[in-house]
Image (tube, rainbow, N blue to C red; front, side, top):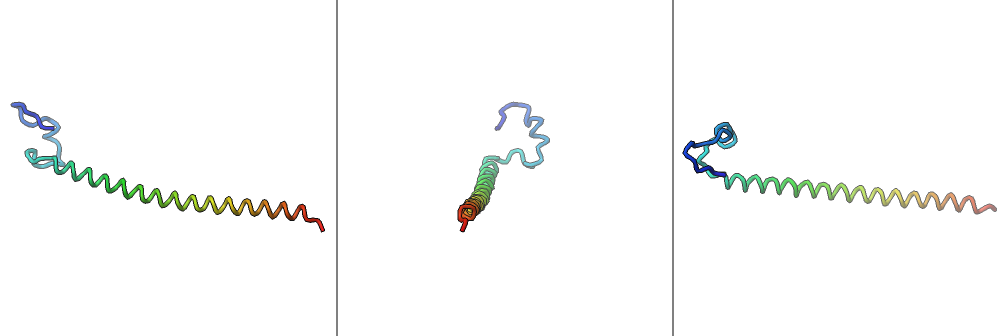
Amino acid sequence: MERNNSFGNSWADQWDYSNPDPTESTKSSKNNKGSKAKDMVSGGLDKTKAVASTALKKVKEGTSLGFHWIKDKYNKRTQKH
């Protein structure tokens, strides 16, 4: 945000070390920050998706094993020869 006043830079602009040249347009740096953030979020979502997929497979496998165990216990109990 640019200020159009006769006092020049604001207090925050004077102490902002991230932009050494206050006359430099910050539009391009804001766009770069946005694209970097977008890439980070996209990478995070891919990672989250992979973890969720792996966790779902483990839950599915565990549930299947649990049902088979219960089924085997029931069959052993009812098969009295």
